[in-house]
Image (cartoon, rainbow, N blue to C red; front, side, top):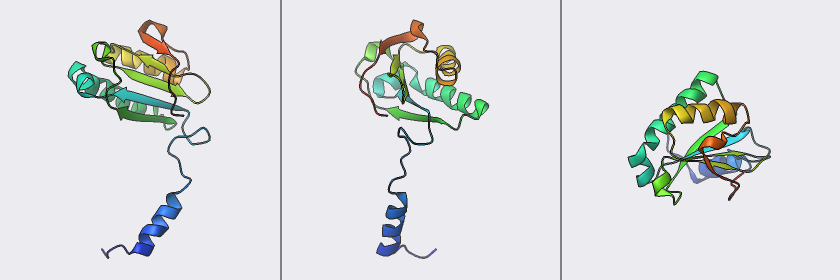
Length: 128
């Protein structure tokens, strides 16, 4: 494979400009963030992430952007995830189990009905 030139890199950069992975006019309707700081991982966030990934695949949900973040600052409430639709306030879910995460996926992410039993906050900083 030939080495990339500066011109090749500039062309790649230019072609990527304006292509947001997640924006109000992007291809995703919802962003799901699984908080995976050290405390989250210790509390079971990897299983929550695995549950979400499996649910995405099972539902062929191509309009859901699944990502991770570091610590959300509420270590005693981990594992946590935040669900953000562009047209509504984010919802932060706490003390998740794989079963709770699956319910959040089915009801909120797919059905746009927040699961208030597992939510600690509605509305906060937004990224979309």
